[in-house]
Image (cartoon, rainbow, N blue to C red; front, side, top):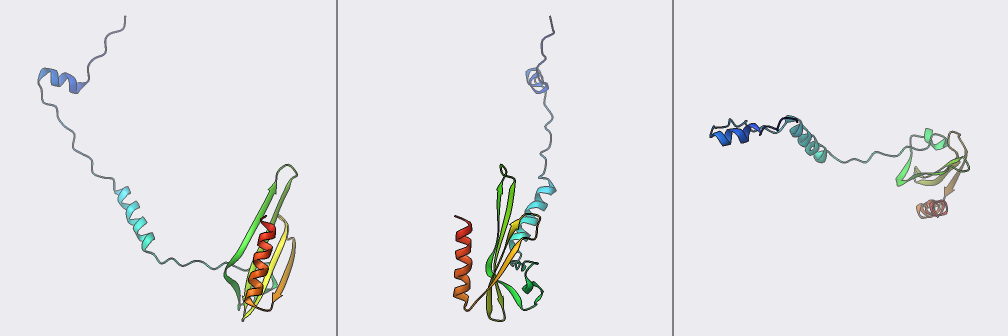
Length: 139
């Protein structure tokens, strides 16, 4: 028959009337303080949104005056594992010296694919073309 379990040290001391030495409380770890200070610094940092880059396959990507208009830039992906398809579609609204163009590029992932650059007479027409193509591809 195995021996009986002995009572915990604190319990035995309490039974015998002895004083038990208490361990000092631990201070919070400095790692936690570093985390909090880093988090506060990140919140206080200026929040500049990085500019999207024009697709490298676009001929306007080499022009210094061309840039993506506001947030009109998206890359869509479609994967069909059963049929081994992995496709992409890029839509960008590009502003160049007051002129607006809608850039589209599509194809299989890993290939350059096909592309189309449509010049638009006004900003409203370019936005409409971007949104129309986005709606067609996200139904």
